[in-house]
Length: 110
Length: 232
Image 1 (cartoon, chains in turn cyan, green):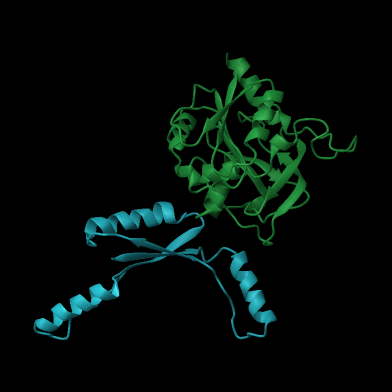
Image 2 (image 1 turned 120 degrees about the vertical axis):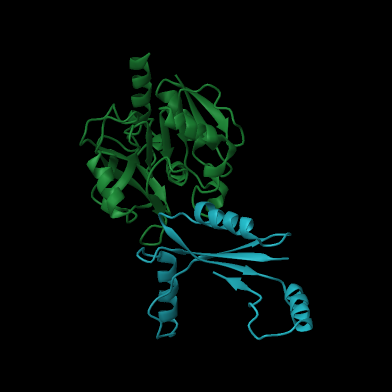
């Protein structure tokens, strides 16, 4: 089942009190060397059907209008991932045709 | 005058808002988020609480509720709408008000009697106050830091749409000490503090006169009632 991963982060210029609290805990427990921690959100949306341009446009809109609030957050990534079974079957198909070494990666990212 | 108070899953202060409406001389009408019917009310209150457990973002899922379609239409047509705390967060998520609310800068939930300065006494919900008047009402939030871009903040200030500012202490890191704002028309007002908890002697903030005697919040509700009478 294809999975769509949407990553949302608080805007860089905003104070992130959660990240700051974690950074404080790291320092208190002797984990030094980290200059900052920021906490964001990862959404996983699953679909039954194929990932096509319509779906991608739909996901883009959902990510910008519902999963994030542009006043306080940025959508920092939308990734389309496929299950291991699908990756295996695609690999089998790819192996059966001439491999020119320039095939697209199985997981698409933009 | 009939004033609707919308209950969402996780609303806490809906009945307090209904009581405030009653004490101001209007009839409260309990409305449900899952309906598309405003039942002919003359004004609306989105109450405080933790709708949907603050999942996704505070007020975000509630802003997508069925009844919000009608709320947005009514607000754009000029109906008075007051968003208190979580209701303010919903109004920003629904784009009826600008800016957004984020976690308090100090990271802790805050609960205190808060002094505010009324910066704009001409909105539907503040016409019973004097500009510059200081009032004290309870504040209780974990994510009450008001933020917006500098452009939006300048515009809100330039157009007199900063309705309330925190006085003495900024309890949550809100930019420019902003506690509440309005839309351009002045019919939609949102603020983080809770006027509905300061409407009845014996149950409000302490004052110099007596414990728990503060009723500064009543002016919000009498303002909208009086305006309706004037227009009638």
